[in-house]
Amino acid sequence: MSLYQEAGPRTAPAATRTARAVAGRLLDRTPGAPAPWPRWDVDGAGPVGIDAGDERAVQAACGVMQVHGRATGAPVPLAADYVSTVTGVLAAQGATAALLARRRGHPPLRTRTSLAQGALLTLTQYLAAATADDGTGARDAAGTGLATLTTADAARVEIETLDPAAWAGFWHRLGVPPRTAGRGWLPFQTRFGTAVCPLPPELRAAVRAHPLEAVRRAGAEHGVSVAAIGEATTAPPGLAPWTLAPGPPAGPPPCPPAPTDPDALPLAGLRVVESARRVQGPVAGHVLRLLGAEVVRVEPPGGDPMRGLPPVAGGCSVRFSALNHGKAVTEADLTTRPGRDAVRELVSRADIFLHNWAPGKDGALRLDADALHAVNPRLVYASASGFGTALGPVPPIGTDYLAQVHGGLAAALRPAGEPPAPSLMTVTDVLGGLVLAQAVLAGLLA
Image 1 (cartoon, rainbow, N blue to C red):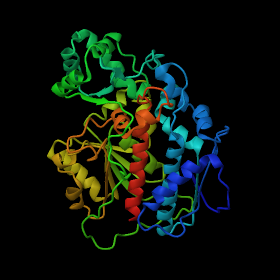
Image 2: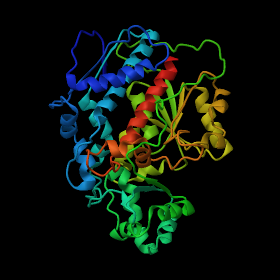
Image 3: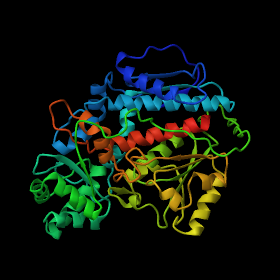
Image 4: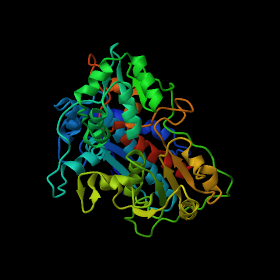
């Protein structure tokens, strides 16, 4: 995404219609929408020197097909207009940030982004890993394979757990020896970064020996989420991309002055406090930092465990750095009162607090919106999770692949006639993080 002054008329290529429609839909949801918005535009390649005039071309040219196809051994296109959708969110972010800057006294800005820039942003982690040299010659695990399993009654299922003990108990319940189950844990957990899941064949055979209900019972007994993949989504129809709720009355909010530098980025002078892990939350903070905000990460004592995820360069995981470089870091144990007090102190001097904790964790930590608005009534408090309340008070584990199943993407991303299965590329984590960033911008504007 680039922001610059002096906009002239520009005709968008026909292949960017989806991106423009997505941007328009998000801007229509933004409160206080002006007439007109600052000028914004979407094209195919932008500053990237490739032929990226449509969805398939940009997926091929920028590597999306390669990452999505790793699990099946050859480049494969995402059947849905994923890159176009991502690019539309980026365009809406640029326009909203430009409007915020204008209201802070910044000279007029125009936003332009492209399908190629949207595609490359979605691959940030994978590009970092593919180009890293950690001095050991290590690369992502070899092999192919989806994580999708098939039961004895031909149901296709995704399972999810972040707990190795739950993993071991689930497979023991299905008759798999502990050592065999253990060999599957690493490829299962690292599939988020490698986009492949070469499970031991014994695990696939064990699921094929049991009907769906038996697999579900094993999951329920050990805290493993089991989701059957179907053609229909289980999410409520018409689900909004975000909701905005007013905080406590605080009088007219101050308008942070625009930086005196006319070339300053539109969010310069704003501070974000981010308590987030994995991909979704860090993507939101990453985009806000690219737009000029100062971002302060809150990490547990000793640092985020994801910092050690191979490959490592300069003492830090390159995948982690790809989404978190440029952010300041403070360490705090949020399970203790001093740790929570440290967050409150940071928030008292911030404009935005964002997290992607599991539902209910904010209240358990006493760091929910009410608690932090008591410290800073003008704070934009932004949160995201896998499912929110869309699937009831006790949703499945909120990770990318189960979101693809319940949201219908597991079917939409595969060509007609092929069995539905989630992409092992983290499509909803990235898109969810971008939507969270746009919700923050909408909150700031409100």
